[in-house]
Length: 193
Length: 143
Image 1 (cartoon, rainbow over the protein chains, first blue to last red):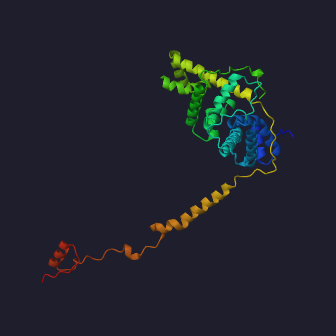
Image 2: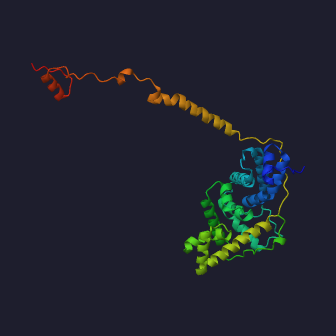
């Protein structure tokens, strides 16, 4: 069923959030479809495990649907569900006691056919970061969130976000010293996002 | 602007999140400082590389939605916490505060009575002086 009934003065996403808050499952499915790839890929980098990333994304979707009525500002749906996902990832990592260091690339579904040596170098350097730094890097460079949005997602001051980004970049620079860093590729050669 | 002020804001400058005044100050510094220019190039390459690597290495994947056979609900803890807070405030206002605050309890009338007439007022002058000098109510008889 396709929703064409948008609430006057509201964007498509806000309208869908309001409909979903009233119990419309189809509206929620459409909302989730709009963010699921972004959530899954963020979980992939944070958890470094394909199956865990799927579980975290699905659990985040379930929690988001259950507690959708507690979201007071529909325009913040994406940052809100991302926050739920980050908390899910934190919980999974805590359970597995992998919070600090988890450099195992084998369990991560990396597209080796496309990824060259330089990309693998970067991903391995990201893997060596601790949870807080890795999360900030993912939100910043995978999802493209602003510093203000990251602060909202993580529930911390914007100054903390800035310092975490700078420290993470410094650690990555140290980790990648003397190694290849991939050049920006043509947008056409990338996967459809 | 010095190098130690410029380095932490290079990333914000590259993403356009630096305010106009600071951006201008940083640009001036970059024109004069080759070390910071090099650092900015490294940061730019790294951030571009991060974006590119993430995009290439993690292909999109179709996910199935979990069973949504539930109804969206309000956070269960909120009404409980709110009712407990209101009840606590009422108890505090009706019972606890009056018991410790003087406005709410009955004060014995004697507490506010004026002190009795000083003993020396109705005495002969000599007796009164002695009583007054010693600051007591003892009746001292001179005669």
